[in-house]
Amino acid sequence: MIELKNINNKSEKTSSISTISYSLENKLHQNATRDILYKEITKLKKTTISPKTLLSSTHN
Image (cartoon, rainbow, N blue to C red; front, top):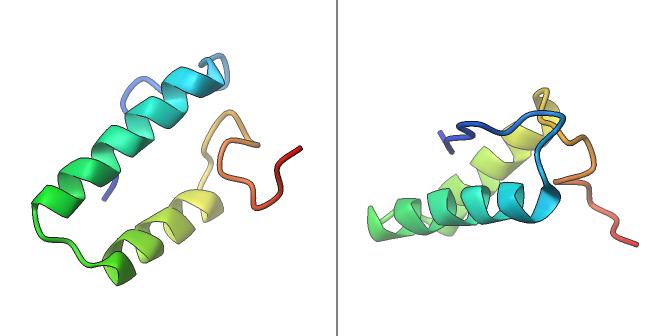
C-alpha cells in the first residue's frame, strides 16, 4: 500500500502530495501496474486521509 508516513490533518498540502507522489513513483519502479496504483489511490480516498481534500476528485 502507498505509505502515508507523517501525513495528518495539520500537514501542508504540497508536502503531502510530494510524499504520496514519491510513494507512487517507488511503486512504479517496483513494476506496479497502473491498475494496482489506481486501486491503491481509490483505497486512500476511502480511508481517513488528511487533509480531507488532498485526494478529492474536484479541484478549485
